[in-house]
Image (cartoon, rainbow, N blue to C red; front, side, top):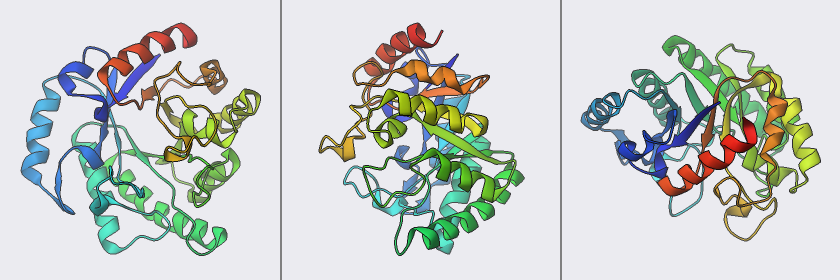
Length: 268
């Protein structure tokens, strides 16, 4: 089992002592001024990153209305402008430069109708998948939580439909077990079925915990340390022969260490 940790959990110097890999969370790496990529900052980061000899995955900008998320780096996959494509292509390039084989992307949100928004998302993903192929980076389309009604690709079947509609060897599914738990309402039998259905297309996994319901904070998407919520993480065994990274999306080095200890007991 390969356990990763997102870079928003703490500095690389601490994460390298815990993780088998790190996920470069591009929106909060201080690589931008507004929407302008600062190449000197990219080079400085890469020099530091390569000194730790850590494998990497990466996470692209996405759409989120939150004071904690940089508004200039917001991208809705279902309605992208020329500048949005530039931003996403920069993420593909950053991933490639860091040697990251996976770049996680979010689906879009529903703006007019679900069908039209879904169709535009597929169109945009096809364009990005071609750029990813050129760079040698696999895109991983992440499932979202249905506690926010505007999210696309909450249920497993819709995510699978999106991946297969794009029909690219450079786009697979990213299973976010926390988001799936919310969509399943905390029902672990439904969650096990969700994982099993999605498993053939999964190329990456996000791991965090929650209570399976909207608690009034981020629609219940609280990104708790594994073991602190209601998720039965043994459902991840339904992924079969998946041999990729289980990346923890938690908010501190301490939680990453605790989560690693917990998951090692459950998944090994």
